[in-house]
Length: 316
Image 1 (cartoon, one colour):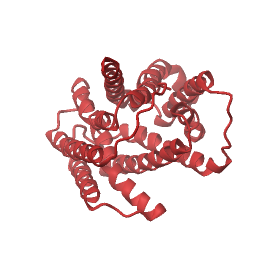
Image 2 (spheres, one colour; image 1 turned 45 degrees about the horizontal axis):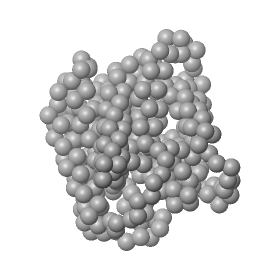
Image 3 (cartoon, rainbow, N blue to C red; image 1 turned 45 degrees about the vertical axis):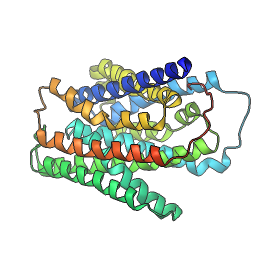
C-alpha cells in the first residue's frame, strides 16, 4: 500500500511541476518573443528537445528491433501534427494572451478528436461526449469573441492580427487532437513513450529551420537572444515534456488530464507578473468554462473506463 502511495505521489509531483513549468515559460516566452521570430525559437528549442529524447531512447533501448515500415503513416502523421501543434502555438503566443491560447487549444481538442475519429474511422459519437465537446467549444468561442472585442488581457494592434493569432490557436487544438490519435496508435503498436518522443520532432525541426531561413537574420537572432531561448527551451519545453511523460507512467489518466486542464488557469496566474498583460475577467470566465467541462469529461471517462491490470513499467 505504501509503495502505491509513493508512486501516486511521485506521479502527482511530476505532473504539477510539468504544468507549472509549461505555464510559466509560456508567459515568459510571450513577453520575450516580441523582439524575435517564433519560428527561430521553435527550431532551437525542438532541436534541443529532439536530441535530448534521442539520448534517452539510446540509453533505455533494448537490442530488439521492430519492423516500423507498417507504421510509416503514423510516424509521418505524428510528425506533421506535432509540427502544426507547436508551431501554431508559439506563433499565437506572440499576438494573443497566453492563457487564451492554451484554453482554446484545450477547448477545441475534444470536438476535433470526435470529428477526426468519425471521419477517419467511421466510429459512432457518444451523445454525451458530443455535448461535452460542444461545451468546451462554446468556452473557446467565448474567448475568441472576448479577444476580438478587446476584452482580453492584451490589446491587439489590429483585428486581422488578433484573428491570425486566434486561427493559429484553433489550428493548434486541431493538430493536438491529431497528434494524440497518432501517438495512441504507436503506443498500441508497442512503441515506448521515449521512442515516440524521440521520433516525433523531425518535421518541426526542419520546417521551423526552413521558415527561419526565409525570414533571415538567424545569426542576429541567435547572438541577441540565445540565453533566454536556451533557458526556455530547456526549462519550458524539454523538461515539461519529460516530466509529463514520467507523470503519465506513475499516474492514472484522470490526474494526467486534470493537470493539462489546469495549465490555462496556471498561465492566467503567471500573467499577473507580466506588465504587458492586464487582468481580464472575460478571459478568466472562458478559461473556467473550459476547465469545468474538461474536468467533467475526464471524470466521466474515468467512470466509464474498464479496470485494467496495472503493469510495472519504467518511467521512460
